[in-house]
Length: 247
Image 1 (cartoon, rainbow, N blue to C red):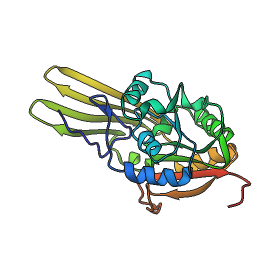
Image 2 (cartoon, one colour):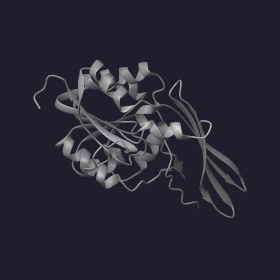
Image 3 (spheres, helix red, strand yellow):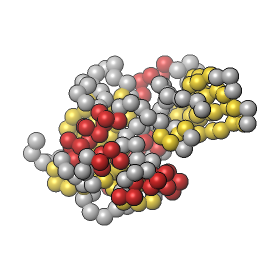
């Protein structure tokens, strides 16, 4: 079996039906658990529970939204998966009842909303479901490096073995802020494709979306933990809170 750990991937592909383990899960869960402060928490695009399950194991009640029943099925098969309430649907609508101390979306999943309109609407719906003092956390890449691509394209060999090859193939449309990406796995038995389409947004654009929704940026870090956000940061973790609440 190929051990594929992407280093320049813009999405979270599945290998053999499981999430790629990125190595930052403990840092992410520590950060989110502090913000949840006991919960409850809601994950947008919960997938197979890479973050939700260890967060729930910390004693935080975690609910989720995901459009893929297959992914939710894999979540249910994992220890603790049955205890997480998951709504099937597009997380742009945040179609859940109640209010949350923490709502979060990780690893570029917010960019799976393919129009600015949808992204703004997601901010607005999130704001409507935040409890007093609650926060919205987005983890995403900073798109600067996309402008360094040769002819707005990218091809990388994720793994090359005797009987299999994994490729990451991407095309960038700067005018529409869109990427079309495919994780391609080639073996003697055939080819498998994991396509991804995303509409990325710059951190400043996310801040404006937050303002439209009645939220403001509380802090921005260059990753989970205490990494400062700098001009060279490749990723950011942005924490939004309601406008008008005392700091």
